[in-house]
Image (tube, rainbow, N blue to C red; front, top):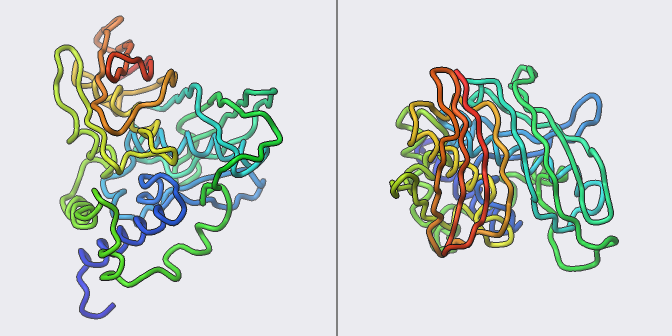
Length: 310
């Protein structure tokens, strides 16, 4: 609009995303990167980032890629068994071409197998030009089917997000008055991030800022922005914590990551720090093999293995 600065427009975009997240109950991090379903010629289930979102300034990094993969792999299964079916991720593996994380824009997924209480899916990670630069696969836990319990559909599992994005939302002042606790300064923070020529997207940077060294590992303090729809720490945020911890304890970088597997042992709460303990299994001039355990109150939440190459 005339008279508005780019920063004000970016802040309004973030306010809109916060409001969408409140209305849908879906993870804020997904809304902040404009996650949405797109059509393909072969009809594959495909999720994409909105590259115009200020939270994506600097390009996707490990958080954004892990979240994109996880939600695409779960989304294709929910489209098969029911959009409101709760499906906790049991494990997820991502394989990447080194140095290509920031170029990833879409994830297309397909159902691998459906068992009585377990579901498997796999997918491809692509650049904006359609080049394949990574793969992902996951195992999910299923409730007894048919499922008739409580649940809400993810907006990006259908075409609803693309149809309603930015439509029928309150004006800026009204939205600010109703902002969630912990989200009040988020619009200006993300606008400042976007104007600062960042090296990585806001989400990955946000997790870095909430990590501190803790012996041969790190401690990550969760924020409300990291919540999944069940109110626990989003899986991509946990994987990001592990990968950054490995980076901080070696001379390899996140961009050197070529494969990682995360096993979700137990949910991580938002109310307590997540402690990451890293073990370097082998390191050479070209490769790094690590094992990372994430714990909360002496309770193991996740185990992550990762390989870095350069």
